[in-house]
Amino acid sequence: MKRWGDEDQGMATLETTLMVVILVPLLFAILQFGWLTQRWLAQDGVALQAARYAGELGGDRPELRSYVAEHLRLVGIESSRVVIEVEPAYVTWRQPVRVSLRTEERIAVPFVFSTSVTVRSTAVARGEVGR
Amino acid sequence: MRDEGGTAAVTTLVMLPLLLIVLIGTLELGALRVVAHRAAAAADLATIVAVGDQDQNELARTGTLRLAADAAETAREYFALNLSATAHVLALSVDEIAASADVASFPTAPSFDPRTGGRYERPTVRLIASVPVRTPGFGVLFLPAVTTLTIRSASSPR
Image 1 (spheres, rainbow over the protein chains, first blue to last red):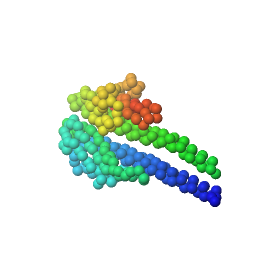
Image 2: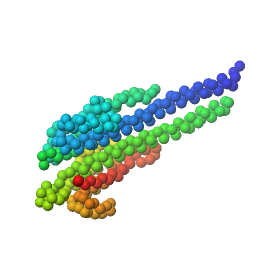
Image 3: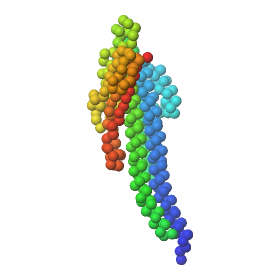
Image 4: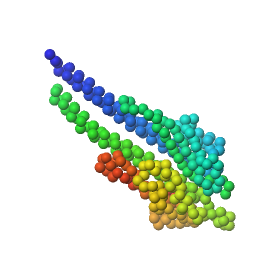
């Protein structure tokens, strides 16, 4: 003979399972999405400033690399994980200079997937050296 | 107790679509904010680049800052270049967006901007652009599948 308590317990277990399987991935997806967005915007800001500085310096210089590393550190990004590309390496007055920052970020949503995402930021400024 | 169990199942069924709607809306809104930020940054950099170049003859002759004659075109060109990073989510090409942008150069100061009603105390380049962004998530929710952002930026040399 079944008691009322047994049925209650079964229903509670089912509901908890549903909650864990649906809501936990949902919660993690929102957190990961927000984190990735924040990371992307922060990196974008650094790329923008770096492009302007590259224009002032005339291209890819050690000072630019130090500047980028310092600003990445300030926004909480480990600079050793960021690939910095400056094209062209040398620019003169009024030539466009493109600075790209690229990071591989790992995102994981429990029970659903785990993958790496490339976060890329690009900005183009203009050479100001040699006018 | 049996009735309560049924109620819980119905509640879950009703709440799940609602939860998904909120989730899709939130994600799309977040993605739209990112694109808006990037477009605004592209406009800022474009106007900064445009005012970074001065009319050298005027500067040597009178010592005053005066924007280069092609400042507006430079802003338009660099707006397109910087916007290209978000090209995959835009409903028009970056060249079309940049071409339709309202870019005005105010080479001398003080000057009055009839479009914004603003007064500039230094030479200024002002850019106002409509950036149409594809928002398929909103489309799923029977909202416009393309959302148009209006970006404004103005820069002056120091």
